[in-house]
Image (cartoon, rainbow, N blue to C red; front, side, top):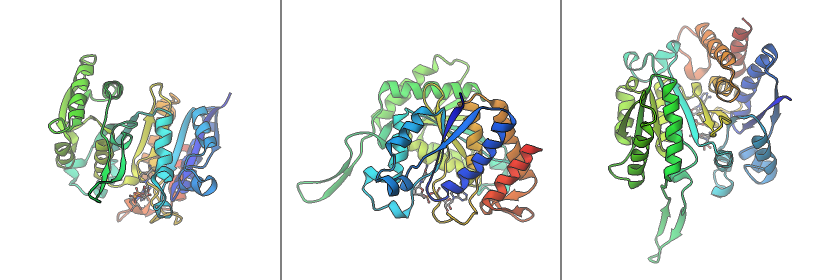
Length: 359
Ligand code: NAD
């Protein structure tokens, strides 16, 4: 039976970049007889417009029944005034929690061809290859109680809850240690244990789990220092594991080290390796519909899908190699363009990768 891939293009540049990623995956599906089938569904603002909810039941069912989910991005100004419960981003958070995708892998790799696109000096970033493991279904983005309430003195008060159970910390720690074992065996756990009791527990549990992985060198760092170290000397890191909100922020910093947010993929995995794969950037409403978005983050997300869910490392490497070849040939979307290279459109970049795959 064909293995189903749920394709959720979403909003803004989502449909444009996902089309290129599907183009690449479809080619490999035929070329390597991967036995995949594709089924599309609405999510985010597009789903709200059609069904009044950012995550219709049929979309959720498709995600649950599929081997993996390939997602573009959601959100945009059109839906910003909606109540929180039906905002596009809520659709994404719901998929993550409904599918129990607690482990978010976010690589930040600087391609040698793009050293000049980073805002940092070449000697600080060249050769950069970090993996951020972000806890994705807990912490302050999900903690209850939450809301905005009216105090007795008439003043409004906003509140959220940062909460982690021991078991939630334990499973993300295992995921991070295993990831480190496959890389350079260095894990840095990022917390704010000097101020937040919840991350004091985080540090304690990560340290305990570390006893099962004596081959991995574990260190701890406060989040404010980690933010600073990421821009001061990012190559000191191999794998970073951290909470949902800290990971959200740190991975965007790491993204910028690589020059463009349009280059970075991500995987969100459950305990069995099932996952949702998406670029780390948003729906980029400022450039949507212009055919200039960089599709490489989404194409590289397909490579992660092949590696982590479908167990097809050879197919994953072919995509990564093809991206390298396209960059070597000088193909650049505007976000990574520099003198001496060739500016291409979103589909032009997809074609450059496809041509490299075809050899
Ligand atoms: P964004 O990532 O969409 O855009 C930030 C900047 O990066 C913009 O200037 C944009 O043009 C540029 N950019 C992003 N992706 C690019 C690409 N592939 N190629 C070239 N340039 C690219 O972040 P934002 O502007 O803060 O958010 C826009 C919308 O996206 C909001 O509604 C936000 O909530 C949503 N969002 C969604 C996700 C997601 O779907 N996972 C993540 C972040 C933000």
